[in-house]
Amino acid sequence: MQYPPHSRTLSGSRRRSLLVSAAGTALLAGCSHGSGESEESTGGSPSLTARARARAARESAGLLQRYDAVLAAHPAAAERLRPLRAEVLRHTEAFGGTVTKGSPASASPSSSASPSASAAVPADEKEAVAQLAAAERALAERRTAALLDVPGELARLLASVAAAGAAHAYLLTEGAR
Image (cartoon, rainbow, N blue to C red; front, top):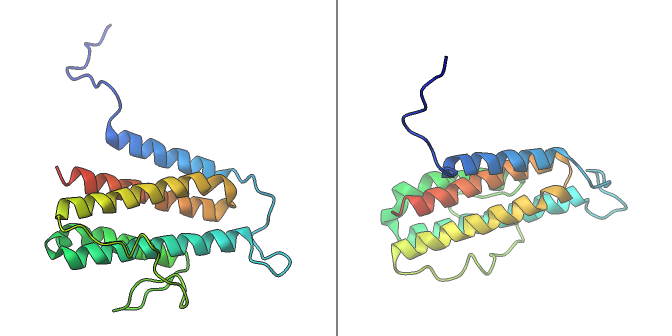
């Protein structure tokens, strides 16, 4: 017995399935640990894991500052941006960064704002959100590329946060249409 073909055939990849497959690939890549360096400090210098975690915290804090700058310049975008900003805050904290209420995000008490975070926010809300999406996308790509260089647990965290960043970029660009 033959079954009739689907009345609706899908051609090409859907964006959602691309995000899911990218996240799955990132998670699988995170499971294989090629570096022989342990997760503990070696010889008095910070371990690969500690350096990567601190870098990820700084990058997330910088992204958080970008969200804050866009929200300050374009309060009408708050409903759309606040949930994504809240996730970026959780990512900063997951990597060990700290953020005190009412102060700019920082990965450590002595860290300074990144140059990209202090850049002027465009007066046009759509352009400001587009730049925020580009920053999310670029950071997600850097984190995905770093997966093979870090040990298991941190790789899984980076993969998860990279997938979330890719989803944020998608939501910021698709929501503008």
